[in-house]
Image (cartoon, rainbow, N blue to C red):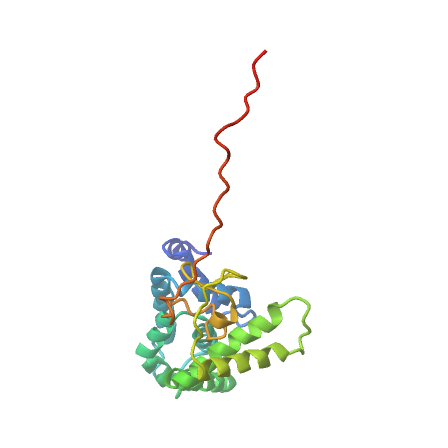
Length: 250
């Protein structure tokens, strides 16, 4: 590595280095799922999400007339990362994409400088269209993010075959049921209590998890029935007898 590149790397944060590594111009290696997952987690921090978007903005600008082979690789990797973060990242990152949609609109008409790069530019145009369509259609975006959660749930449950999707059908039925029926009141018994959040309890965890709450949605949702918080009653303690037999000392 040259001295100039060493000084440039020295002035960058670990987040910026991760994004640059995932969107470099090396066509032999692509960004791993582990690396993109680390970057998606970093989008939930206001500080690191700004560092991520700064690098992405630089990767997406400066392509007016055409793109070279190296730039085609870089753009394709950048779009791959953006699509991954749209499906797995924070709402703040999605808001950034919405506010900078013109970058992707321009790439929908991307052309290559060399004939051998036409397959790459074709992928660039296709992925740019996917990003624009997904961001514009809120329902499509919500369904894609929900499908990711359900897929992760299907492969993270021990003892379940990869072809077994029965739990997904149950999730769908629970979702439909929760949309048609109001949230039941939480009774005042203390049996089989499970945390609904750090302040509320529910006797049945499906009351909460059946209402489309995912690990990606970090916003606190308003829960109905907050005035009917269950109280765990404690039985009175048996007081010890005040009079104790004291053995005489020898």
